[in-house]
Length: 360
Image (cartoon, rainbow, N blue to C red; front, side):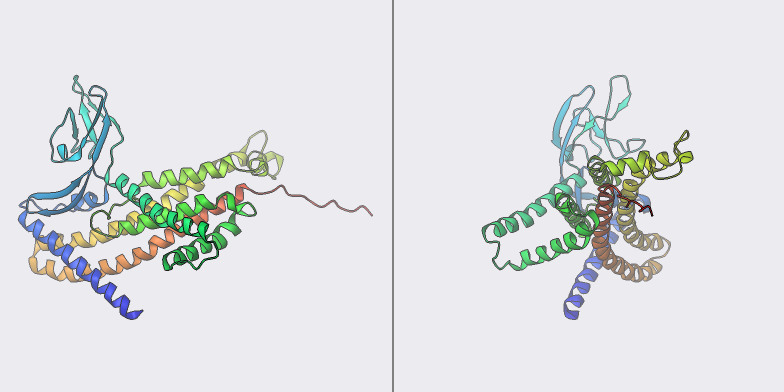
């Protein structure tokens, strides 16, 4: 086991050294001063193409599909390479500055800048579709194998999936949700594996991986909304009774509904905590690694010798952060699933039956 760990550590070390060397060469060939803000957020932010590398002033990237509907130009479908280099195609272009920075816009005949209805396959959307394909490729064959031979000996891949699935279902879903846990297991297991796979994909720094999917607050918000809807739509009568008429003194419920208002607000704060927790942890991990990388060029612009000295420290800390992010990828998937299961379980609470007191 230690031998495998050494090989993995060596591979990641070489990967970071090659990445830093390539970035240093690209920066050296570029006459413009190093912009840490553009460097960091350019890697974290979503994009209409999948950047692979740069050779001098030439950027090598994989174009994605742009699907937009403008106010004057209507529906338009085209590959993103037509607009990713500052060009305009059929009235559409990517705005470089302003409120729509990095987004596709169109300029209307009256000079107004308009944001069209955008269904484009961006880098994050591409990564989400890829993660869905990986999920299907992993679980559909495993499910078919168990259907054909339920008592058969599973393969190594299926055996590993079975261990993880049973661990999440028996240790997280079942005790948190309660007796009807099987109804919610498909959603909770899907969320767990989706977050886990997208987190791991985001740590692989080359095409078709490397997108910051769960570090995008829009993605985590959608996941939190799913949990919110399931929690409240399938909530029991006792759950809603405890929100609008909790067991507290009447003065806290009427005429000023203080406690019902607090309980109602809590139904929104729970999913909000879900989305912020996942987004903040993944975003921060990517940010720290990129900041450590940017320090090399910041100090290198002051003095090349200092830059080379800082690079040794930055590479070491980057490898440490990368290993830590591997752990965080699992932890955040587990935490999101666990909290979702707890929230669903709390909404399935049964009415309390108080025993009658005996009269002597």
